[in-house]
Image (cartoon, rainbow, N blue to C red; front, side):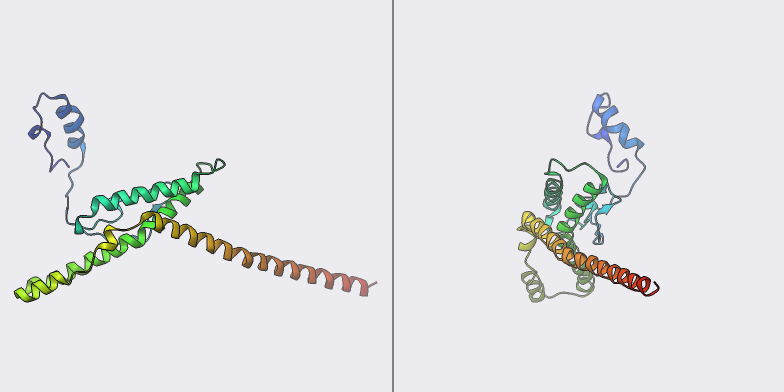
Length: 208
């Protein structure tokens, strides 16, 4: 930030905001290099520990492709809000690490597939550009390439609420499926213990 922003260019030197609130923090910030076109990898998970998550470009740096950075960040925020509402809507819910982590997990599972798809498309286009720019491209080929671009309707018209609901329903379905299996295992353990007790009783009776 210090290398790219000079408050004196924006405000008079005697301006309080320039000298104290804006310039001072930037001068204390270590020099950094900014890459506006940086494209990151799709993260498998957006949760770190139990109380930290990431949104926006921190979660899916895509080099401003499709001019969707702002809308993606807003969608992230909406999904995170829905996740907190889902977990903490009950008056009995406590603000524990477990519940916070659960909310972050819902948010991550809601947004991860969508942004991973975007990053996959962006990276594939970057790989193609190397081949395209290496040779002269005829006008006909250029027109065909531009008109044959994949539709971005899925990106711009993405329903965050629907995606979130699908995640919740999938997890609830998995829990319902897991309950009978757990009960079956408990019954098997009980039957095994009962059979063992019967054998011990039979041995005891035979020894009398």
